[in-house]
Image 1 (cartoon, rainbow, N blue to C red):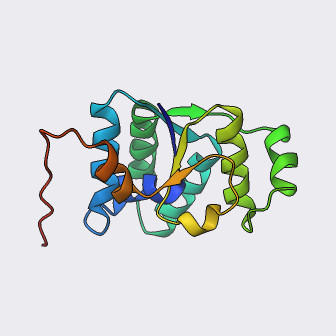
Image 2 (tube, rainbow, N blue to C red):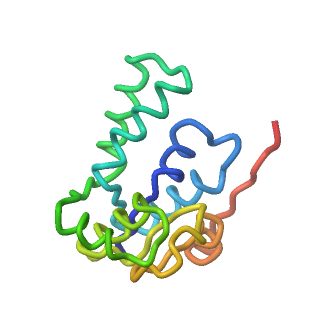
Length: 147
């Protein structure tokens, strides 16, 4: 199975695991299952920008981006995706761009916390929680601790 991760889920994994532990758990479950973990290359600059705006040092941002290169296979985005996104029924262009690229790269699903933003996507979407509920191996369990 090929799963394309939306920027919000990747940011959860990198910087907001305490607020969105289900994103980290979903990443772990996808790894356990041996799924192909994809991320659009266009998200890299967005993530760098968001981390810097949140106060991360240049060095820290580069370390995070290096980690992403190990954690995910980056899929390209191109003018075909851009043109298709313009005609997409999705309201947000960035989401349409991700959906079109994921489709071209034959992703089986897009993982996002914002399912409603992908209404009309030809690639199915799933929240991290729903992903864990569906794909977590029976012999695994995760405890989320409030700090």
